[in-house]
Image (cartoon, rainbow, N blue to C red):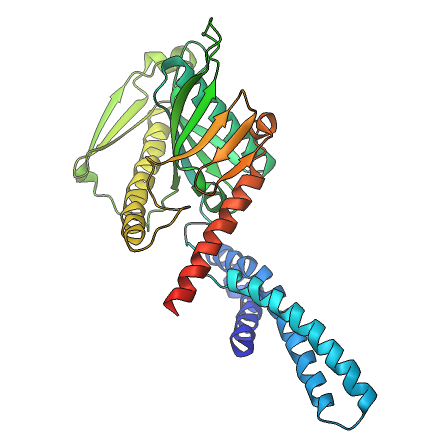
Length: 357
């Protein structure tokens, strides 16, 4: 273990040296990549140094036990017990930190929210979910932008697609993919009956050109007049874009940008992200067939969470966690739930690695 940790610390130092290299400093793309890798290792290196320090202290105390000084040996024995307990805790931390990382976790993301069963109430719930994730993004100092939306007259969304950019955005929000259910009395309900509605969320890692290769000949691109908000310019020019990827049948529309060129770029970004996600889902489904994962099955049709307004609670069905703080949750205070999902997935990975070893 110590040898492995020393190698990690050495790599971290080499990356720091590379960042100071004038040749690399002049290459912004390479510098950013190295800086990101260096930063991602900070926590692991800090815990590794602590492990090595305590490990060496235990070795020193064990050497004292070989001597003849009775008083020193008693002190060393007590200290060893304390240090070994501390070392065990650090080992547990290291096991989690050394788990293989999902390369997509550091990426930006595309968030798609679609109203499901429940008519106008489902569209209003989709709007509530939109508020959760935009408020959460603001809390994290991330940036977000609506790429496409289809609204309703009462303030809901039939569909809304967002681009969210920020450090580790996908790694934190990837657990939100699935069917979200709401139980409440709709605004349009006069008899006071509780209704159940649903909305589906898809969280896709934003694809880079190196991730997905698309041939222009495989694309069918149509232009049309945008509808909804945006002023006279939006409605009088054919600025909206519909892109169909012929081999897969995937269709993406975008009309929220001011120009055809911008809408085309945004639609291509969503298309590439959907194609990358489709490949990821295939791999996730294959893994799920081999092991039963509660947290990340890659199945977007799975019912993952219920928002119960009469009881003021949110329940995540994958990990059985319930939070009785609905108002704050609906305003983006979702970190506690995300942390619990991360812990549950890490526990699954640890169990899996122990079985394999």
